[in-house]
Length: 107
Image (cartoon, rainbow, N blue to C red; front, side, top):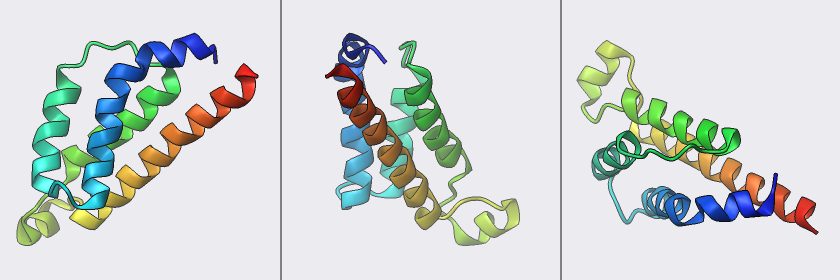
């Protein structure tokens, strides 16, 4: 991956990273995260690098399946807050791996 390519994504990507970390740190609730992430993602015209796109798309899928109400969640086989958090952790780890990979190849 060309180092300049990652840097071009940085301003927009850091907003996602900050939001993902805010959920994991408990600074936003899962329902708040859902609203903010969906708004950001649905209105984001960025042509992401495939690795970044895949990580964000996994979060989008998890947010789409997330259901706060336990009774409804069981009826629709939705994701719980714990499930959502797990997917966010995976995505964030993926993004960090992409960055580390880029740093290794840029040397």
